[in-house]
Image (cartoon, rainbow, N blue to C red; front, top):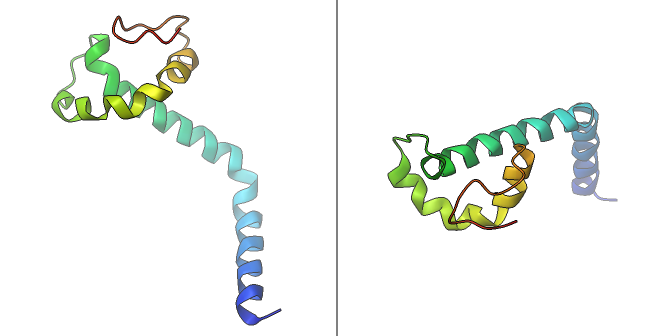
Length: 87
């Protein structure tokens, strides 16, 4: 086992030691951040004024794939948008 392989193994072990207990916290924070991002992108379509709507409209095709998952996570049984019928 070479020096580089040992160093990578040590780095992986240290990452698991320090980040392992907080993995669920990191995942929750990442999910909350994504939910906020989706709200900002779809806010204009949901009737909430968005000063950045001009810029976020370009992101709509990218986030349409995750829209169903997002609106279910937010507690909406059906799609709140007339233009997006995912359910």
